[in-house]
Structure formats: structure tokens, C-alpha cells
Length: 286
Image: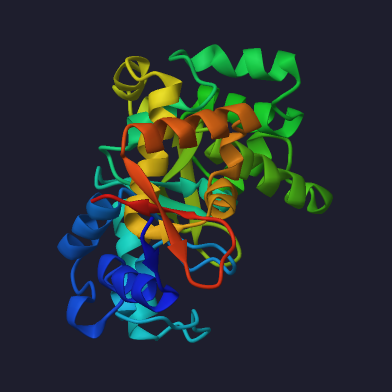
């Protein structure tokens, strides 16, 4: 078993994450290429979570997200995201770690295959009846189902969640629906106190071809593809971090173990020793 250093891993990640001045993302086209190359990434860096992110790729280095709205890296990152919402560049929504995530169109069916959707707009009722969907999420989904795309301000009102006391419940439910690939932002409206509000739509209506694309993908293979892509992106990583990154997928301990065993047996990943760690990490074979 090969032994590698954390310094080597960091250098390799800097290249794959485009986290160097020479590789920084400088245009919308390069941003799209970056998301396509990594398959999925976070929009911002997430403390304690190892994933590529668009902000650092634009900055060309590791840096804190600034508070100043006129920061050039921040402006490009935010502006390109807003511009993309009504385009078919990638899928954007709160998914991994319930944070803003960008998913390439090639991998979107694989993520969808891991969800509880079966291809019909009324599938949400199965989850609600099983107790796995909140009442607030049901109300939001049904408002969109009946009325079509709505900005967040009107959506709260139509879902009967517009009171001050219901804001946190609305936000949690909206994230729940994004994690479950049921709802996604598709634009920005001049609404609310800041004249800025996402416009939301049902995923299946925005991506009508998605259920059919996902139907042919077995869940075991979907898990394998996502974990392989992640390991390829981060170069080498411990199993615990992999579980944390994908925790919203709710995979069972048995599914995790079978996935790791299959990937090693098929040589889609390999084990390496990292200086200072007791257990072997999984590493890319790419």
C-alpha cells in the first residue's frame, strides 16, 4: 500500500480545485467547465468539509468569503450564479450539507436516482404519508404545483407560512425540498425587503427529462459513481469525511460498506496510507 503525505494531497487538490492563480476561473465558460470537471461542488467553502468550491476556484486561492459586496471574486461568483439560474448550465440548489451546491448535468441523473422520486409530480404524497416529508414542505410544494414558479416572498404567502414566526419553518422546508430534488431556484425576482428573492420551481418541471434519465440507474451504481467522483476530486480522503459530505443521502451503514467494498474490488478507488493517520484513506485511481 502506497504512503502519501498530506502536503502532496494538498498540492494535488490545488490543481484539481483550480485553487492557484495560474488556474483560477476567469469567465463564465471556465466556471461551467470547472463544474463539469469536478461533477459537483459547493458554491462557498464549507468549514470542516472537504469539497471543491466555486468561490475558491474564482479566487485562485484559499480565502475567507468577504463581507464587502464590491469584492471582485465575490461579485463574479454571485453574479455568474444568478445569471445561470434560468440557463441549463448546471443544477443549483441546497443539497450536500444542505448548502448551496452546483451539480453538472452529466451527474444530475445519478443524484436524482438516489432520491425518493419516482417520476410523477404527485410522488411527494408517498413521502408525506410515510412521515418523511414535513407539513411545511408539502404546503410549499403544493403551492408551486398549483400556481407554477413563484418568488420566495409570494411562495411564503401562498404556502400559508408568511407570519414572522413561520420564517424558520419555511426556510427549513424549502431546504428539505431542495435536498430531496423536488424544488429548485430558477431565477431572481425584485421582491422583498432587499428587492432580491429566488424564484422557485418544481425540479421535474424544470428538468422534464430527468426522471427517465435516472430510471435506468441502479441505486447501488449511483452511490458508486458519486463516491468515485468525489474521491477523484479530493485525491485522497478518509471514509468518515465521505460519509459527512453525503450525509443528506441517508445511506445505511450496510450501503456504505457495500459501496466501499465494491469500489475497491473494482479498482475504481484504492487505499493509501497518509502520514500520521491510523486507518487507510481511499484515493483516486484517475
